[in-house]
Length: 458
Ligand SMILES: *Cc1c(COP(=O)(O)O)cnc(C)c1O
Image 1 (cartoon, rainbow, N blue to C red):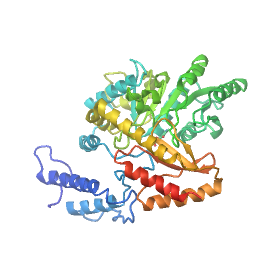
Image 2 (cartoon, rainbow, N blue to C red; image 1 turned 90 degrees about the vertical axis):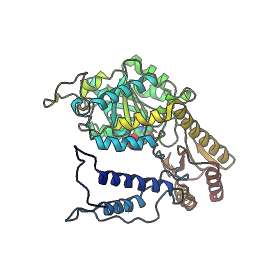
Image 3 (cartoon, helix red, strand yellow; image 1 turned 120 degrees about the vertical axis):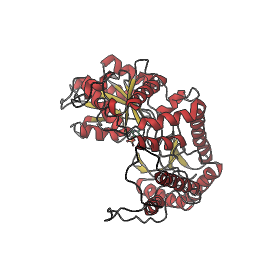
């Protein structure tokens, strides 16, 4: 191949550039096609040279360098990839990601992304309404659920007039995601501003404990800037009781944020909506289509019942831009300024799946979790699941140091069988955790998993 031009030619097609892109796509397709023969984790990995060379590289050398990085990549397509909330990438999402890179538009401002800005606004409004947040609802895309959660809490604080208040607190379940603690750190609040509320035996927030915590906050004169419900906790997929939580919040005028990074997508399906009931009571809702739906990373939305609050909180004015034709530019509706068109892969991915494809994806994930649960139930294990597609477990009655060793050994034995699980610390003990979101995982993998776990028991 001849050397590549640096930028696409605006006046004519460039067969050389097209061949290069096609070769990169072919290389990716080959990587996919071979992924069942490799293991979830690469065995060894060599990185190419890091610094730019004195003279630019020809196309073959670029592709060879790419291949080295691909060879060392985590392999989400492998049927035994069950460790995390990272499924194979949805096909249309991959195409959309390539096109989005080629368009190189910017969600910062409308004149830098005319169609894409409208697409993002429209899709957020559609998703928010589909999840029950009402006809006025909408939102903004963010690069990950941590950022969505952070923006939600900043909006909640702004709306409550508590910006700069040093005593404000956030209440969430003890099993809520670590990103909430990080958010408070960024917001200049001490770690003690996060009040963890006890969970019940199923891992869902205990509503009496929340009521007690709210009363304690009142007695101590601590203003509550938000209550956070989790729809799908990270270790076991538990869903907090959103309706009674909303009731407690409403009577006190407190913002309810629902962290649905894992579970909110179940609200898109009539058949599975009851697994995450009452999402519509949220003032704000985090959804991560990058998890179960397989939209290529990153894909997260922050949805609000009143989306105008985003600009009310974050707008600074963009004096170097033409005025927005709607309410506000993308860059005024959140923390990010320049932002890629992440909405394109979400929109095209959802169009590819259709309602029936979404249903089938959720159905398959839940069915695999139920099947694994049935296979493990006869064993002397403590199973920690929920209504979604996540299942954690550890041997009955095992203490902390023993379970640390057991989970490490068993994880390695599973990896030897090309089954990758994660090893979360939960309730002071290490568990093994399976996330059943990978559509390639079949009966054979689940049976092998159960057999290895059975053989590993003391
Ligand atoms: C994954 C997750 C997040 C954070 O999302 P990122 O995209 O990793 O930043 C937040 N909350 C819950 C419950 C999650 O599982």
